[in-house]
Length: 409
Image 1 (cartoon, helix red, strand yellow):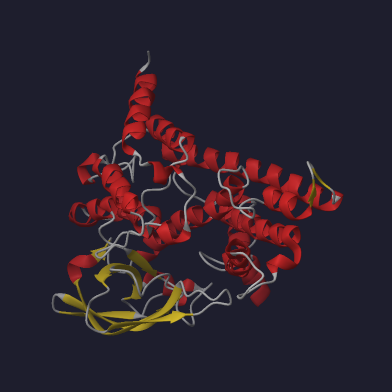
Image 2 (spheres, one colour; image 1 turned 90 degrees about the horizontal axis):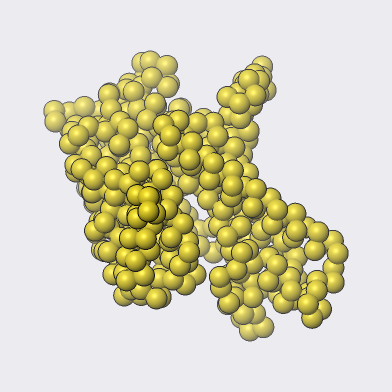
């Protein structure tokens, strides 16, 4: 038996013994584990599952064991992912630290930064938020004006950020600040980390059309940040920012993967998959009577499968040392469009039952579809607008001129 087969057998045995039964069911929205200083576990099994996975470093399986990660090889991580999928295991932890900050720290952070923050990310002890966009600096992120001025052993931060996801619930923030106003805009930006409990920080949730408030406005007034919290070199934060954005876009592209996975079954909800919803609301015994809808669903399923395989190939390439690149923009753009298509098809499938907002006559999952359909529209904006992604693809992949620069001439 090969070492990989041995690893698979050992992993399967460990998962069978340690993954609680309730963690082998489709994820419920209010049971997602975000971790943090004061974590909430609606399901006690969620806490147990997180602790067991974190103890092995398997919340971040390929990260170095020196910092609490699993230290698995790329082949072993594939096996682990396959075995988790085999039992339909839920993610033990959902974290911006895992998807965005952690990879950037491993690449650009000092040894001290890694020792301080990476183990806490692995164990879900700190919940992070991202301080990038500002009221006047969205697509043109490098024009940001939140400033950090050096005073002794601290930076004094003043300014504001917007669209900071879950800032009202986060413990720490990774933030872009301007530390030099006398150089070209890309050259005067620094990347720093600081505690959201610091004096002078306030947040204000932004209510979306879906009725939820995952985003916030975040305000900084004379916030003291130790100079030791600077990541990388002073005024060279833009390099880190771009790298982190690539990780973020790869993470957001998983919206498209989720749309495909949910369509492969694994839940009893009648609206969990496009095909299931169509059969429940528009089906006739064992067939779907509407040929146009049937064709659209078939094409969606084909595209979902193709996207899943393309995403997997990208993951394998990154584990061979290629790292995130313009491919992340391709995956982000297509994955978000795929997720939006899913909700459009769900609305077509369930018909007037997808028009509810509250009250009698609608099931909970039908009301959720309405709100998630509205929420999916934001996929085209978050993590860099679709226009920005297409511009990156045009420049970096196709070698075309910068269409944004041409449009300004």
